[in-house]
Length: 332
Image 1 (spheres, rainbow, N blue to C red):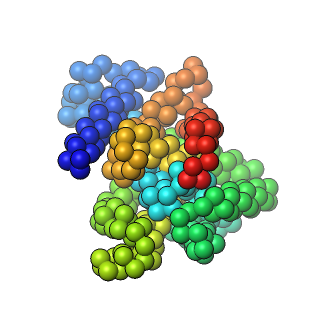
Image 2 (cartoon, one colour):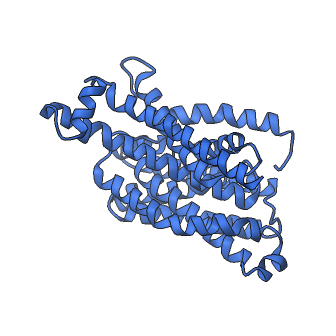
């Protein structure tokens, strides 16, 4: 049974990875300067004209790479929180973690007036503060009841109010910049930001692998887990810190892109077919969702390029309604 589940997991990951690869090829090929597959391949290997190299390496490839990394990071963050709380509605945006990161990042942008290293640091501190508050509020509900989700929604509304207050007091130009960031956008992505997100994602992988192995044991109960050498409290801290770090670093550079962290684990769960949330599968699903949503945002309306957060928000809202309608109150 376990071997069959593992084989299915590998098959699902491979299939979704192929979908992500196809989306990536389309993203690099189409646009105001279309490229054939042959010209794209030649350009990627150092050939092609100078204009083709500029379009691929300076415009499209950084945006695509950021979309892949951010999608994977949000998929992992959502899978960690849903596995930890055993609730399909647990995600950084619905729990208010993205809102806390957004408040801290907007404060850094508008009040401190910097977009340097303080931005991801501030976003992490804000997200971690909200996560700590929710963990304290949910200590009496270790299974992740609906009250924790409602508390997160309340925190999200509070964060929205704080952000609105900061934007009203800011200059018009600064408010416009913050508004674009709050919508969630992958446009004008420099390579150094891609590098930071990649480093953070790789650095958290050991903790994520450990949590994926310990989490099922920690949910057997404190006494049983301790007898097997696993500390449930430590697992919770590592899982939450990893989810907050991934959410915060992506939020700092591309804004609070909504609902990817909610949708990716649910899709991974349905593809795996045995009720479990595969963290690796969720990462690959997220890496396929966000570039596809970015393609829709860029080319769905001729002559108008939308921020990707508009598309993920619209899709995610419909998905959330579907999830609520089909859950029938189970595990919420």
